[in-house]
Amino acid sequence: YQYQEMLTNKYGEDSKLIYDLKDQGGEMLSLRYDLTVPFARYMAMANIQTIKRYHIAKVYRRDNPAMTRGRYREFYQCDFDIAGHYDPMIPDAECLRIVAEILSELKLGDFTIKVNDRRILDGIFAVCGCPGEKFRQACSAVDKLDKLTWSDVKAEMLEKGLTEESSDQIGNYVQMAGGLDLVEKLLSDEILNGNKSALAGLTDMRLLLQYLELFQITDRVQFDLSLARGLDYYTGPIFEAILLGNNDDKKERVKGETVGVGSIAGGGRYDGLVGSFHPKGKSVPCVGVSIGVERIFSIIEANIKKEKGKTRTNDTQVYVASPQKGFVEEKMKIITELWNSNIKAEMSYKKNPKMLNQMQHCEENGIPLAVIVASGELQAGTIKIRSVGSREERTVDRNKMVDELKQMIGTTACNC
Ligand SMILES: *[C@@H]1O[C@H](CO)[C@@H](O)[C@H](O)[C@H]1NC(C)=O
Ligand SMILES: *[C@@H]1O[C@H](CO)[C@@H](O)[C@H](O)[C@H]1NC(C)=O
Picture 1 (cartoon, rainbow, N blue to C red):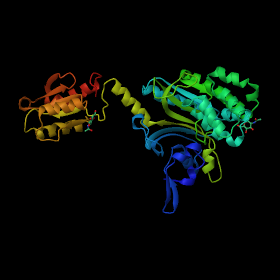
Picture 2 (cartoon, helix red, strand yellow):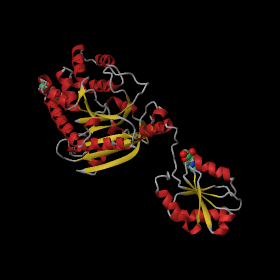
Picture 3 (spheres, helix red, strand yellow):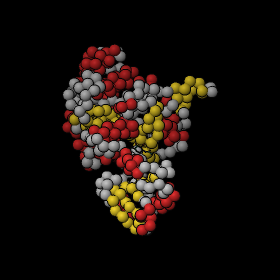
Picture 4 (cartoon, protein in one colour):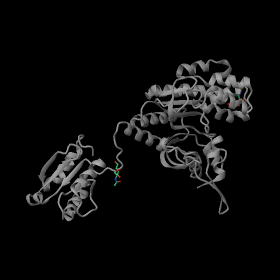
């Protein structure tokens, strides 16, 4: 549990999704909303100056669950953060490289990592005449550009008290996306580069994109001015990874390009958060990413289903079976030998199971190998090894069983 006040003023509009536990034994508590704020508090309390770490744990959102899309009220996030006073954009570039590596490795399909910078956005809002106290609201409206059309977003801005003129000016900027060329173009935009904050953001964005080129991930990255990320604590670069795919249940964007399956990772720089928890206000700059574990699982499962495959939820390598009655003790001896040799093995929990049921179990659970013992083998001092997939059987010496199995498990043909 987190003290409720620690979570206030950190998440902007999303604060409505925080689980409050009202007055538990006199304390105002909330369930943690993400791993970033608790991490920052830990850094401050333990007075840590530099750290690089990952953390996989549960977080809670009082949101509408959508099981099939991997959206739950209690779910896992995997966070990776780099904290410390370093030169600009080097840790940021590494975070993006890590996200790109993870998403490529998981083979989820085509993806894009959108990047932007809070300082650029704030600069845009400022030069477009949006008053400072409305920045965060404008920000969360712009953030919806991936789901809503520009005219819906503009309507929200007007509702939040922005003028028609300043909304239109903001709209011209935030619908742009590109690469280094766009950064250069904006750097020479005299209205925008006259704002210190925007200039600092654009200068860092140029550096970041140059580093990402060296890290060989520019083909995965897009500088997208509509990316805003709702959370309040970001102070510099922000990122969001989107899976691309032909998804029907999402409105087409005005721009008509990237229709995503949704966001599966996000993050950014939060230089002020540790300081806000530190007793003396000492700050530690941080940058990090969060990866949504369930979302990724639901995508992987859907992909496997599409290929008519099965998701294995256990990794048993060998099943110990017998076609005859009265072999439970013999099977126990064999399975003990396998367990002692670090082979993942299972046998029926019934004393005298039917052979057909034992083989069915192997097939249903994707267990690749079976060891079969019967009276003939027992007398001859041998054992049968069956490849469940091909149904091929081999008879081997009982005392060579473990070696044989280990060899078979080691080959790629065996899906062990
Ligand atoms: C530049 O933008 C910042 C917001 O990031 C704002 O506070 C500041 O007033 C702006 N300066 C000018 C000269 O517009
Ligand atoms: C093993 O995984 C399969 C799916 O591949 C599942 O149906 C089965 O229930 C699992 N068995 C156990 C014992 O967990």
